[in-house]
Image 1 (cartoon, one colour):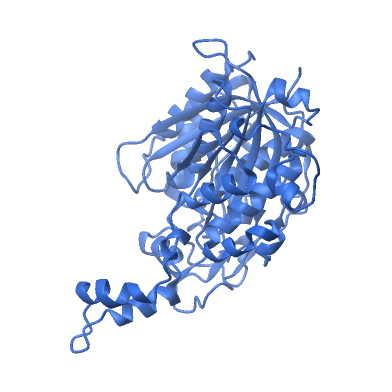
Image 2 (cartoon, rainbow, N blue to C red):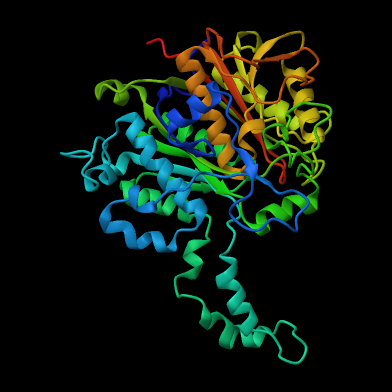
Amino acid sequence: MQSHKGTHDERRVVITGCGVATPFGIGIDSLWEGLIAQKSGIAPIRAFDAGGLKTRLGAEVPEYKMGDYVPKTYRKSTKVMARDIELAVICALEAARHAKLVTKCLIAREEATGEPTVDSTRFGANIGAGLICADLPELAGALQTSGDPATGAFDFKKWGAEGMEQLTPLWLLKFLPNMLGCHVTIVHDAQAPSNTITCGEASSHLAIGEAFRTIARGAADVCICGGAESKMNPMGVMRQQLIGRLVSTGDNDPATACRPFDPSANGMVAGESGGLLILEELGFAQKRGARILAEIVGFGAGTSIASWHEPEADGVGTALAIENALRDAGASPAQVDLVCTFGTGINGYDAAERAALQRVFNGRRDIPALALKGALGTSGAGIGAVDMAATVMALHHNTLPPSANTRKADTGGLLRFAHDEPVDLKINCAISVAYALSGSQNAALVIRRYGG
């Protein structure tokens, strides 16, 4: 497999750190150990009373204290952080720690001394975000004030004159998608190109791909990238229920409720998670003596045009993204040692992804594969970066962890999941796939073992 080359000689990009927040806990070790131990992060929803919903299962990040993840001087700012923002800020600190990258945040927290590792003007950020749910109790009070006493109907004039007065002046800053990147870049002093990607479940992959391009073309030396989102709120869960995506059975056995690629599966489990990776230009990483986990060698995207909320049965958009990523990496389908699938447990989407993979890997059988959603649920913009982090760690450890609830997965003999035990596996090249459940965006990333 050749190194990534574009129309000009581009710089090589490596991954040196992974920070995650998942239902298994905070930090990359909790994710990897949870996968190896075949844990399940799916359980009855605790964040709110889900008694009136058809599904009462979710995948929630365990309790944490935001004061443990920001400098003391920044703790007041946590008051204007929605859950999604909190997850991103947590993942950023964990990623910097994992990469042993000294940033302004670590110095302010007295976890490091001296000067930051990277010039702030060469430190970029690309973070995927979703539709952040407003604080319902806070919003409800303002809406109640705006009702017509006689009819109970919403009155826009009263909303402007009285309702909005019930909201804190900084209320909107808690719910803007770009605030994930805003807080991360402020805390870590990242002043190079920065962007927010809002393309549903494909957001993390697209953000990582953009960061890859940013470094490759010389606009930054280091980028923090990925995504975060929480669907563990009434609006987030209800929206997925109304669209018909959520699993409606399994309350008695949450750990087996979501079954990727299983013909008997009946839906996904909504969740929350975040993941941010540290990407560095190869020479920069070498100069600072960083541990290189993997090298990014290819990125591809594609769009499905048939429907904004239903998959194309032939998976052509996802296949296009995979083909573009492999072409970008100078790799053939035969060279791929591991496929990290996006399998959600939603039959139509799983079938479309299977069709896409069969289109690309035509003729291959028993390709080692990962499917994480059976244990971690689907969390919008955050889950793709978790998939990528798991893929990086699988390559780094030469290990294929078990994929929950895939024993009856039907991929036509194309994919081979591990079940009862992790499998020793020499991985030189891996690909991770993602697609948006709404919006028709598809993306894929190719990584390889760094060999000098």
